[in-house]
Length: 322
Image 1 (cartoon, helix red, strand yellow):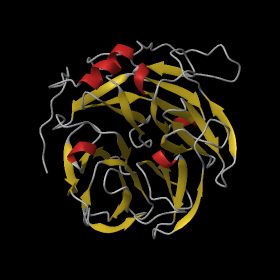
Image 2: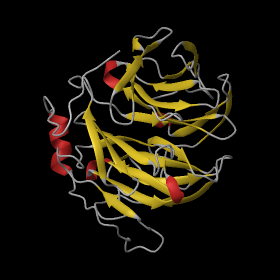
Image 3: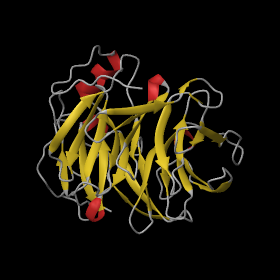
């Protein structure tokens, strides 16, 4: 599939009342690097502010960091105006483009393939779009439905070492689908109840070095670990604010050491876990200042031990140590 691209100034075709409410609550960020007033709540940098010009955001939600195929890695962010923007590792705007369609809704997740292609979960159009790093469309897969090769509101994408592609879905499906490198459907994963609960909005996916798939089962407030054949290996987590508990984990990533980092949308924090489910520490709290978060939606690991956190209703990205 080929799609047209619009560049430079991005203006959404319409705004819903919910988006207007989001903007009324939004914080105007700063590009300056800073440190918070609380010991241990270190912030290495902040970029973005509310707006529609390049380098600004209208409720950012999805984030992905590429590997160092082109010198210094870049950071991709998608927001509720239907824009994908690419930034340097330090937050300088590089290029941006609009999704080909966005009247029905905007993407919520994406991932960079090891070969440099950007896979965007085009959530409300029930498909995954593929771009090069400059925004040129390379193809797509999936269509609306509940059968093999179909999606209901795809949320995120992950890849394994053999080239298989994994896509999370919610709404009627609430499952993970597995695809071959040539974009053919392979199998559905997680469709049956797991410890008495079906997946409920699996919104973040990451593949670890052992080639097992971790899923943020957000509305069940837990993480689920799958083998690549779809069998369940472990689960942990429960609803709450105590260490080891979560409040709507919307995304997760892995540090270079293999530690899981979970982004809690309602919990307004990051939480580090060992793979056996032990809570190691947390970062962040609700608020508008540095080291404070307002409805954080995504997190991605970057170079030099950095984490990039999508601070959605503050319209910014915060960079913190992993």
